[in-house]
Amino acid sequence: MTKRTRVHLTAASAVAALTLALSACGSDPAGPSLSGPVVIDGSSTVEPLSAAAGELFMQDHKDVQVTVGTSGTGGGFKKFCVGETDISNASRPIKDAEKQLCTDKNVQFSELHVANDALTVVVNKSNTWANCLTVAQLKKIWEPSSTVKNWNEVDPSFPNEPLNLYGAGPDSGTFDYFTGVINGKEGDSRKDYNPTEDDNITVQGVAGAKGGLGYFGFSYFEENESKLKAVQIDGGNGCVAPSVEAAQDGTYKPLARPLFIYVSDTGVKKPQVEKFAEFYIDRNDAIVEAAKFVPLTDAQKDKTRAALADLKAKAGAK
Image 1 (cartoon, one colour):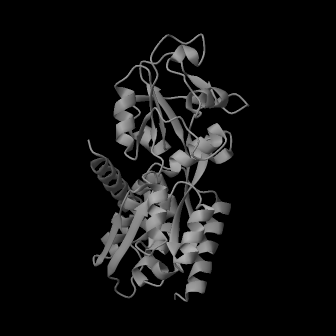
Image 2 (image 1 turned 60 degrees about the vertical axis):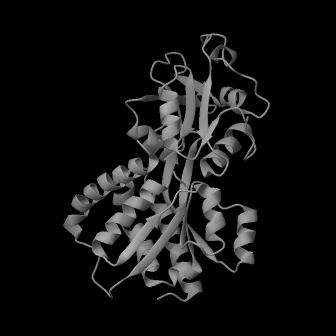
Image 3 (image 1 turned 90 degrees about the vertical axis):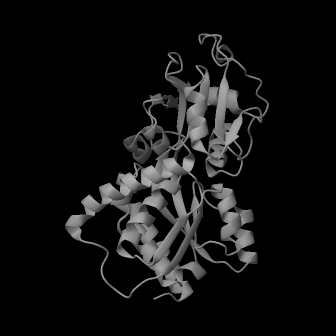
C-alpha cells in the first residue's frame, strides 16, 4: 500500500465518521458561496488530520479544492515562506531560520495548535524482549556516534539479534523532535539507518525484520497495530505506553508533542482559506477523534482560537 492510498483511506474513514458525528448539529452554516483552492503542504504526520478536515469541508463547499501535500515539516515551511502554500502542516514549531525566511518574503503567519501526539517507538511483533526502553537506551541506539548493531549491545539481557533501524528523514518534523528529545540536539542522529518521509516504509521494514525498530506518530501505530508492537518508554518515572491519556496528562515523557498548522496572512485573506481555518478549529474535537489523534485541552483550544483571531485582525480579514 502506498502512502497516498493510506492517507486517502484514513481521510475517507474519518469523513464518514465525522459526517455521522456532526449530522446532529448540521452542516457548515450557510453563507457566501466559497470557491477556489486551499493549498496545504508539510508534515506527513499531520496530513491525515488536514486531509480529513479538507474532505469534510469540501462536502459543504463544492467549489473549494483543498489539496494536502507531504514534503515534510521543513519542506513545507520552505514552500510556505515563499508564498506557495496557504497553510503549512507541522509536527514541530517553526525554527528561527524559517521565521527569518518568512520575514524576508513578507509572509506573516499564526501558529495554530490543532492536536497532540504520542510519538511512538515500534518493534517487530515477534520481539519479546524490548517491552520498555529508557531514554538512555534510545540515545545509545540513535546518537550520532552510535555503533550499536545488535540488540544485545543495547542491553546484555537482550538476544544477539541484528538491529534494523527505520525512522523519519531529515526534512521531517518528527525527525527534529525525536532527535532533539532523545539525543539532546535537533538533527543529531546516526546516519546508518533507513530514513524516509513515507511512514509505510517504516511499517513494512519493522514488520519484516525480527530486529526491526522505528518511530512515527501515534495514529500510524494505531492503524498498523496488528503488524507492530509499541514500546513503553521510561522517561525517568517508570515505563509508560503511548496513549491518548498519557499524551494529554504529561506522563508519556519525553515523546508527547503538539501538532500544528501555520496559516499565512495572505492565505487568511482568501475567504475559502479563512473559513477552512475556522472550520478546522470549530470542529476540531470531532476531526481529531475521527482521525485518531490526541485531542486538545480546553486551554489549548482557547489559545488556538485567539491565535487565529489575531492573524485575521492583522491581515484585515473579515
